[in-house]
Every structure is written in structure tokens, then in C-alpha cells.
Image (cartoon, rainbow, N blue to C red):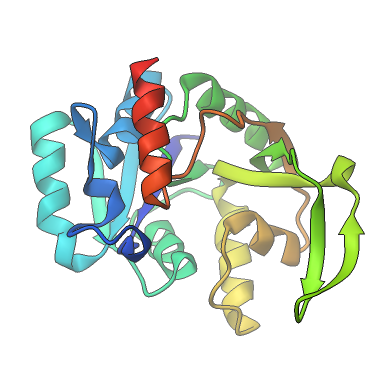
Amino acid sequence: MKHYAIIVAGGMGQRMGAAVPKQFLLLGTKPVIAWSIETFVASQLIDSIIIAIHPEYKQQLEDVINTYLPNTNIIITHGGQTRQESCFNGLQAYNFSSEDIVLIHDAARPFITVSMIKQCIEVATLHGACGIYVPVKETIAQVNDSTLTQVLPREILYAAQTPQCFQYSIIIDAHKKALQSNITNATDDVSLALLAGYTVKAITGDFYTNIKITTNEDMELAKLLIKK
């Protein structure tokens, strides 16, 4: 059994209005995507890294790897039109064994830790699937057509983070079943595992540091975090 990381970097980052996707923006001394790759490598728990990238930015990714992460075992595959398609491409980019452990991570989350990686691998090895979650801080309301329909019980609501971690046989089966059911735009992989009937364990993440860079405000927060 081996451990693999799939980094989903197929997005174009249009919400930030930058000239390049957000994963290539400079955060401190290196691009956003380099931060999580370095952590996966530093953990010494990952046998290989697969990155799903838009074909237009394949050369730019190769330049990042050669500059910041030379001699790192990285496989590059095409990102898809959706996050789900990018993940599926990553799952098909290597000859995995059914018992291998696969961590799927967003390229725009630079601050994962070795501890998170280790815990994900341990829980997925025991239970087959897990995800990182943090309890929500605000009261969450459901609104339909500008009208409040209900206030949801905050004590059972959690926000999803990545990585999400699976035995390969589970996550590839979940993706194939989703496609058979014409589900093509899932926002994460845990949802597909649940739809396929698998049990998913929850790991507590870090609300304040394991942020996803989506907006310019997120980028400013990330810059403050690296100063600390």
C-alpha cells in the first residue's frame, strides 16, 4: 500500500481578476501551489504527487516545479472543465492499486500541515474515507427567493476543508457511479463517496489557517499568516 496526493489545480481563478490562476500568484517567496507541494514532500508520507492542471498552464507548472521543487516525483495531468472532472483525471493518471491511499487537495489551500496529512492517512487506512471539517462559527440560515425559510442547527454544521482522503478503490468507484448517474459537477469528493454508499469519517481541521484562497481578501489574509 502506497500513499498519493492529487492536487486539483485546474481552476482559472477568475474571481480574483488576476492575469494568472490563483495557484500561481506569489505568496511570500513562492507561488501558492508550491506551499502545499512542499508540505506533502516534507511529510515523507507521500510516494508520488499528481497535479491536475489546465493545459494552458502546464508549462508554468513545470517551471514552478523546476524552480522550487527540483527532483520531486510529480505527475502532471490535464484538469477538466469541472473540479469533479479534474479529480477523475487525476485518479486515472497513474496505475494505482485498490488499497492505495489517495489524498485529494485543493491547490488554493497552501497551509496544510504534516499532522493533517498523517491523520488523514491513518483514518482512511482504518475506515476507507475521511475529510477535514471545522465547525461553523456563524448561525446559518436557509434563504429562498430573499425569504428566510429556516435557521439550521449550528451545532451539527461543519465547513469542509481539504485534503480529503480515500482508499483508491472507494474513490474511483464513487466517481464512476456519479458519472453513471449523470452527476458531473460535484464540489468535493466526499459527497460522491456518500452518494455511493460509503461511510466517511470526519477529522477536525484548523478554521484559521487551512484557508482556501478564493478572493483578493483571502490572499491578503494568507500574506498575514505567513508573516506569523
